[in-house]
Length: 414
Ligand SMILES: [Zn+2]
Image (cartoon, rainbow, N blue to C red; front, side, top):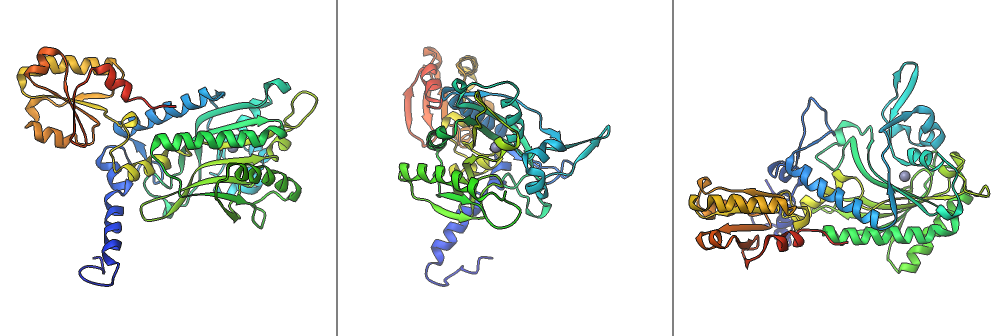
């Protein structure tokens, strides 16, 4: 029971309302109701699986980010989700980060670990051949799995998981190019957030803290920090500084989001790393050492989708809606025309489905599909003309709209 009800202190109503909104849009409840994801104790906690609606949302986001990166000079790669223990000893993860890693698996006398990040694989891809100055900045991106041995007590829904699909990318560049690359990554983050309907709670400059969680090289930290401060100053963006929130290898600009209860987490990040290039002895022509800019535009897909469910209450922007169009014949007499319209929607690239007349009154079928952006009603007139009367989910009527125009309106912009 909410102690605020009934009566109670001043301000109780707003507290009660915001609590109610929190509960209503809790991504764990909505995620199951909308068929986004679920979990099973036999798979294990912190290891959710994606149901068809969730897989559709996720694919739309992945395609969008992939295309945004492609248009901005990234080359995509794919690398395995595990590597030998020696790889993580070289990267520094073993010394500074092993508490968050899964224990090694012994296979034929060799030790393998599930990767805690994608950086080491990308560093190896960089050094797989000689690099000239002209190739820099070399922007490498991958949507790949990474793993964290989170204790089971803290796991829940999509926000704290043990298996993460990370939108990751690393820019290998000359040190004097790093500031421009950090700024370009922030541009991409801001573009993506606008497209996803996300508002940052705040920007955080995450710095080194005390202890052996951080590489002990004050000069290196000062140089990386100077790059991030320069970019933040140039962009005129307000930010907070926090010690102890940096990566073990360098400082970060973290873009924080907040859930409806005000709990904060990091979604997007840009980091300057002068440590791993040294550990992996990365070079470009002339023996020069590149800098490594780590960046994630939308973070881990799990945390992103959890946030999107809560922000949009399940009414996702059209381009990422699990079902973008539902075809609603008024009666069985329009079922052939409805089937034809469904076919044209699918061919035009829309995620569309049919709600046949047999499933209830038009009103009941519209209510059941109230989150679908395009509700295409087919009556006798529309059946004859081959079009549909388009109803939007806010209840407004858009009239007869050709399928191609609907499809064009259901694409993200870059
Ligand atoms: Zn990285």
